[in-house]
Image (cartoon, rainbow over all chains, first blue to last red; front, top):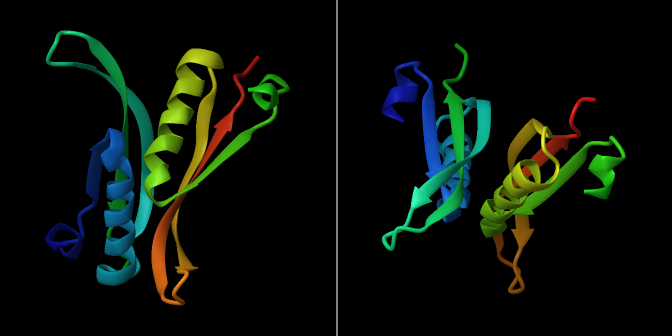
Length: 71
Length: 71
């Protein structure tokens, strides 16, 4: 919120199950706190993570960029 | 998959906690099944749902559009 108020864009990053949480955060920010803020880029990708037992798994990741409102 | 193989775009819709699942589906589709398919639009929005007890709550929703691979 501080960053958006200073007129700079913000990027939210999330992986796996927290993706829906990041989307919630973005929506609450946009609807309740910084009115007029808009999405610029929503990127979806996969990352390969190594588990504790050494096996590997693919996890989806998401990047949401929010732009400050236009003045 | 059938639709993408027929060269038409596909839209995935999800709400609330299933958003991360939709992202997983999109990634698996893109990486394992229809190689070369790409995202065109990823839209994030909120919807107001009425609960069973009549109260209302806001739920985030997401729309992912996947384009068939270019030939």
